[in-house]
Image 1 (cartoon, rainbow, N blue to C red):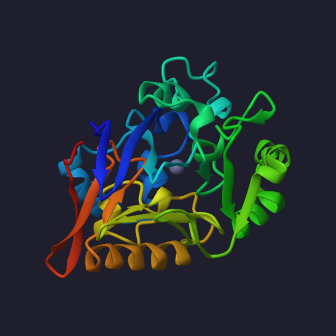
Image 2 (tube, rainbow, N blue to C red; image 1 turned 90 degrees about the horizontal axis):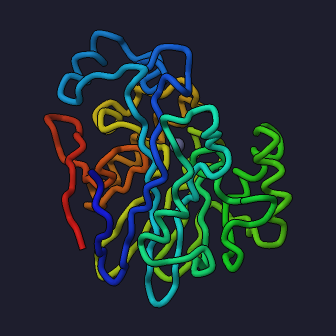
Amino acid sequence: MSPASFRLGDFDCHVLYDGSRSIGSMTEGSAMRFVFGDAPEAEVEAALGPYGGISPDTRIHFNYLLAENEGHLTLLDVGCGDQAENDENPDEPAGLLVKSLGEAGFSVDDVDTVVVSHGHWDHFGGAVTAGKATFPNAEYVMSAKEAEYINAKAEGWAREYLRVLGDKLRLLPDVAEVAPGVTVKVAPGHTPGIAVTELSSRGETLLYTSDIILHPIHVEHTDWIPSFETDKVAAAAGRRRLIEDAHRRRLLLFVPHIPGVLGTVKRAGTGYMWADDHRSA
Ligand SMILES: [Zn+2]
């Protein structure tokens, strides 16, 4: 299970649980192909052994990050919101982030900055509720490249969300500090403008990976790219750079879709491996 909250330098961090969904509810195809694309099946199966394999029943978890520093409250991704379509998935409720925010002791009014990593439903679906910004006092930020992609290619609801957010949304260049110690960096591949976010304080740095990593095995096999990436070559190269950087700089990783969320990159032979991190507040 993920920690409810933890500290990173001067940051107070809270993991906000948004729910989980089975892979079978998201694809009619092979669960293995969904997460690992064209990777050699026998090799994937062997690598998956320690993780209990993968099947249509395997749950993808949704966890996002609320970070408080110098009196400033930043939310990294907003969860599924209304896009969870819980009516069609009654046994797998999602879109629970606002409830989790309340359990952490905050309300939607308290959030100052909302960072949207990319335009997929499980990260951006909660940005708007009943036609209004879910976090009324927040500045929403997103990379200009992702907004361009959403306007050109994404589903109708995501384009509508951009319109609803209007002046509340600030579009970012490829690297931007958006709050004290909070830096957003574009890392294209999963989508053309997806961004990761770094929190830095007192010599410690956390990297919120968004969907650059979905499964611990992606740390070992940077070229096993999910079937739904917009640019597989860029995704593999970008993931490789991210893993090397995380190892060299000893970053703490926050991966929204790994159940324990926190980990580090350790050396394994000539490559790398995911290692769970068990810190708590
Ligand atoms: Zn995702």
